[in-house]
Image (cartoon, rainbow, N blue to C red; front, side, top):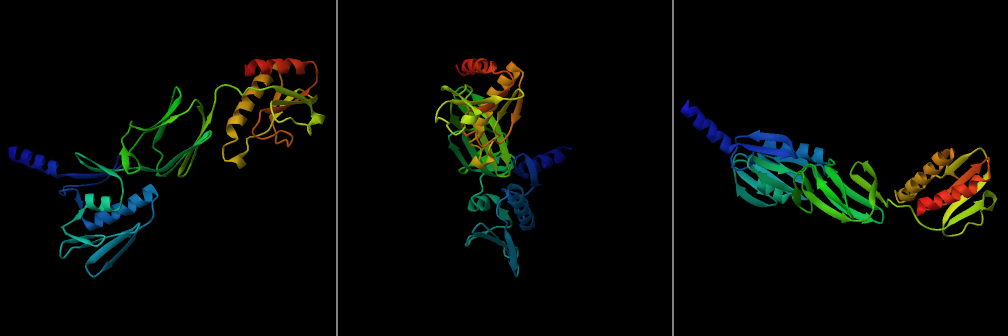
Length: 304
């Protein structure tokens, strides 16, 4: 019994586990973080597929087997126990993972049980005006936390950026802003965060009869009015502006919804050409003209 325990402990000390994020991809009793060639090739194929990186090429010349990826070449000759990384030859009975991952410039961290590779690799984080764009490979492993005058981007997995890996719960980046997260748009390889101030836009209210649509001033909140069946119309969000129109649209809709609720109007979203993009504007079709001044006063209250 004592002998069995000693052997078990010895084997556990030499075990090697390979993870992509929290997912175990390979486990064996190989020493010094090494893998046999077949297991290594299988792992690289899986990682390329899971992370969405460039595909690799595999071939062999006699007993020399090789793999080419992203401008790097690695090979292994089992008969002579020779391992080659970008032309540099090393004597080895198996693939040394430290050397190959470093040569491939794939971010990884060493833990007690083995090696962990990132399951998300961030390429860029770019902020322009009211939009934060994050381009990446792999799976989305980010959490966004709103705090006073800042947004924290936190890792929810093993996230690599600029060659560094962040573990779950670690802060990756802080974005200084007085705006709040209005919407998060997720597409393959792209996360788009749209920001908006909580307060409404300020400015004068411009009240125009709908027939005066050709005489639109440059500044102010536009209120077009005409006789109608008690409805308020705003223009829809415009995808042509890649998200930059969203903050104004969201603000415009919020004001219009409050007006509709207060004065029992029907809210409609319609692409009227008379309503400009990127500006608070709406059309009021009212059966009672006396409501126009009341609505104007109410909007002034909202804008304070």
